[in-house]
Length: 218
Image (cartoon, rainbow, N blue to C red; front, side):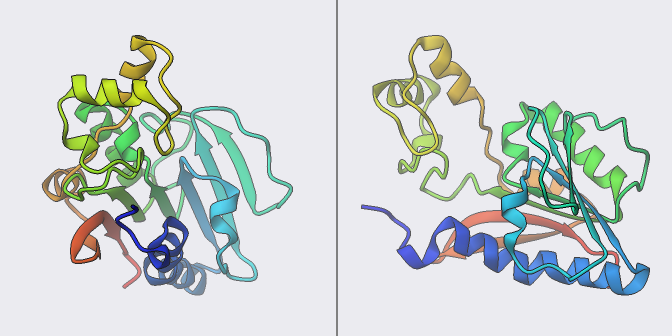
């Protein structure tokens, strides 16, 4: 049985976040500057199917693996590592967007590097990440899996496919899955983004995800 009702599926959450937090920043930047340069770390063009301003928006999609260029001229696909975006100078963008990325970049030192790049690249940013203390692991869709000791997690991903995870084919593969995600709590996110407002997204009165947002336009 899924702990989250159908009305609270991932797409609905994303649409609500976009409408509440992302779109207002974009609108404010476009109103002030006439355009908005966005860097989406780890994103893709499909995410941006939500309503955007009719003109003035340019979105760069940064991913560590190469992706095909979009036919939509508003999008520019870039291959790069979010831990070191040295190809762009300080304040190269108006807005940095990151959705469910930072928990996948590595250990704490890697997260610090990503956070520093986000804060360096734009005066406005939005960073969303699943909350460690939500009882349903959003990647495997398994209750409390992310709270279990590593050996038990390894056994679970080796037994069958779970959520986004294909069934591990070897111990090495299982370790890559288990170590590929390090979920954060509120204190950690606040430490990574000390100049941000930290918000909590709740479902069924439980803290599902966390958002660090800096809006310099207000």
